[in-house]
Image (cartoon, rainbow, N blue to C red; front, side):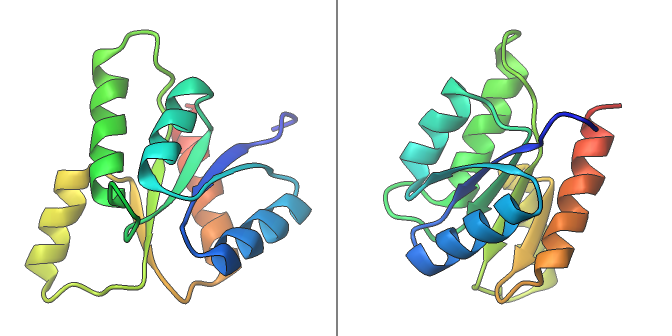
Length: 134
């Protein structure tokens, strides 16, 4: 892929936001950031990324809600560009059933727990953007 993959990172923790912005930027990705769910939602609709990394615990509107709203928008707006969403969370849920329910409800394409491995995130980005583009 000659064109840079555009990634929107949404996280309210400055350390994580800066780490991902710097690390992914050095790996050749084009990065945009947002610090809460509503800002992330607006940025994603205005300039759809190729991939979105979305923290779950956000002020205002949580990552599950933002993911679901964006997926519904992509389904209902013929002009909308579709892109994969990966949830990032430090919070483990009580059970596998609950985790499956939340993932299904949010319609996210992937979920990763903090602390994360950068290579794992990069592999997921490549895997899901490749699937999305074919």
